[in-house]
Image 1 (cartoon, rainbow, N blue to C red):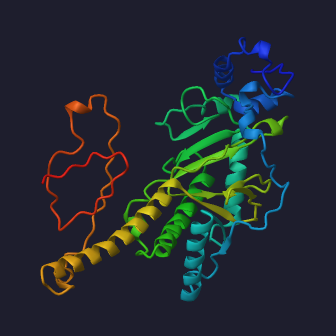
Image 2 (image 1 turned 135 degrees about the vertical axis):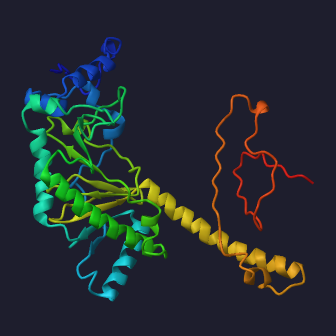
Image 3 (image 1 turned 120 degrees about the vertical axis):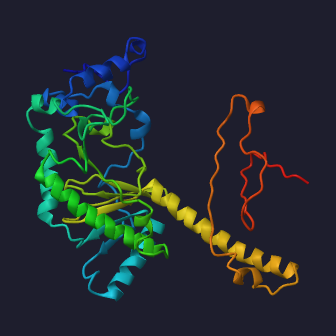
Amino acid sequence: MVSSSRSSDKIPAEKVSDYDRESEVKSFDDTKLGVKGLVDAGITKIPWMFIEEQQTTGMIIWGSTESPESVPVIDFKDMDKDAAVRTDIIKKVGEACEKWGFFQVVNHGIPESVLNGIIDGIRIFHEQDAETKKEWYSRDPQKKVINHAWPTGGIPWVVRWLQILLILSNCRHYADIVMEYSEQVVKLGLTLFQLLSEALGLHPNHLKDMGCVESILILGHYYPPCPEPQLTLGTSSHTDPDFFTILLQDQIGGLQVLHEDQWVDVPPIPGALVINMGDLLQLEDIVMEYSEQVVKLGLTLFELLSEAQGLHPNHLKDMECAESILFLGRYYPPCPEPELTLGSSSHADPDFFSILLQDQMGGLQVLH
């Protein structure tokens, strides 16, 4: 078991040369018990590996301030019964995504018994017998149920005060409540993809048909009581690398979101779920906006080209030249021997015309 005789919040200067963070972290990981193991051992001071002054300095404590604004709460009641209600919900979802990137949803159709059941199930897992939990401790991506203290391999610079239980949606040998929760969340996820598609002005199945709903990953975060919570974090500031996250809070609270450079508390609402727009959906949003703008420019160019040939402005457009658009994003990473190769060879584009956006690195040449 890892313990600490730390007597201050910083490593004393005379001890810096003696302190081996890698060994401390490895020793902690080898216990396969995580932070719950430290709590069970009765520590009163957290080890140095959990402390990061940069993250905790100036940290706004949850519940200590009041914000004039709050994360939008959207009620899904009667959404499938009343077209006007659905239209209003689509509008609210679009506004919340644009302004916040977050919203809470109530009356979403998932019974509170299922929500409470999954919270209890995650807690029970982490509070069960230590030897039983050790069997699940791993970072092997081939396993369908994984318990660990941090998600990636290697030695993290700062260890967070949390335990993570990772469950793949196709895991059918764990617990009935996980399967029931997964099925309910998938249904809600499909509804959210439809609403998001419509909020973007697209067909309801647009994001679904793109394959955005092909996988689901369940992460159960567990934060045991910390003897020095002012010195560490359970989860640091981050964005989610997915389309969106459906987040179920317990009633303890602690979630904050960054809005207009201010951290805003997200108080738990019984039965509510927090929807967090991920990096991939935000990319989809900018791609859609760029595409719409390029299409407008393309139509103008078709009109100008038609007139330049002495034709009616709509001549090329009426020939259906403007019926499709293909978006290509090319990336050229640094090459150790650029004189020996090419990013793109000489070519002609097999289309009516290309609208090319260059970055500031340059490199484009045309034959004239």
